[in-house]
Image (cartoon, rainbow, N blue to C red; front, top):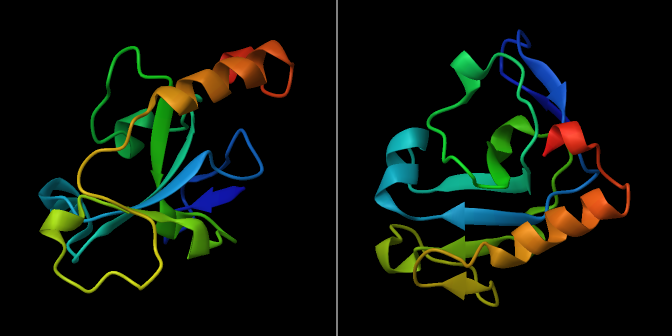
Length: 127
């Protein structure tokens, strides 16, 4: 998927054609980062980011996934996004949306990343 900032000075592609997961997060940290009522993130297997000094808000050593802010990615289908940290929501959650009270379990994405690497569907340098 194509990713770019508003000014187009940073442009890159994600390692997969679609994210492992999409989250609309209502936690206080995401509200602060986005200056909005929620943050939107797409989860991908960890991959080398261009210009990490500009793109990385913080790093989590050993984490096998990265969160890319959803507004930077072209062509995302947000219908399947999960709303997380809904107990802190400032806006109504759409009826029928999958919701989690707090943080999701990332273990399924770790297993999915390992599977993609082992089956040659993702470059090992990207993980």
